[in-house]
Image (cartoon, rainbow, N blue to C red; front, side, top):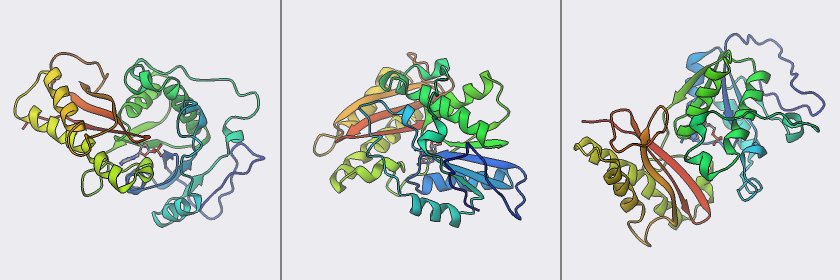
Length: 284
Ligand code: AMP
């Protein structure tokens, strides 16, 4: 069953002849791709009913970011979710999530401070606030997030733990194109030439993993390996590297030496499109 927003009601829907049972929830901003659908598949394994939200959350975009141009192909999204066996789809309007007078925001956990938190002020405040609100609207036992947004998965984990939210968090692996590019709704902004340049991110992550597996542990060297790959190729690689760092996979702290608990994280700009990717490092 597909449920779309009733602008008059905060969150009432009618379910007829359907056993809801245990619900697994997948929050998204739409423009769905195989990465999102893999979360839906994982959610199906975890519960009787899968609920998906599609909401381009304005409070997690800075004024300079791509809120207005963010793709919103709702009909295609609903067809894909129907075909994937989604039970409930929640597509609220802005006024449903942020009615007049809305003024309560979550102060994000400490793991939100570095990296995306530093480069996108207010981003995780918006993420935490909308995630908590969606959790309160959708009666789910478990929510599935993607490793693709690695810091976000840590932030949501901390939010749930710190506020004792009655929900489990499941993290599903990043789904990639056959050539390694991490799937992203923003990939559709890329021209064919830019898409080739965008491959630098996954190449840089494979290169750093290879160095780590060969025994390199110095993070300055590992970070330099990523920088080199990001600036390699024609016409000189990505247009800007926001960060390319090895950090602790639980708290994102950066130290001199990498360990088996490290993760490599990259954010870079190709043209006007900002892409992120990451890889857990493992020796062998
Ligand atoms: P978004 O619509 O970009 O807000 O993403 C919604 C959810 O899908 C988040 O939990 C993302 O981490 C996840 N996601 C996005 N891209 C991928 C991908 N390539 N593989 C797995 N999960 C993804």
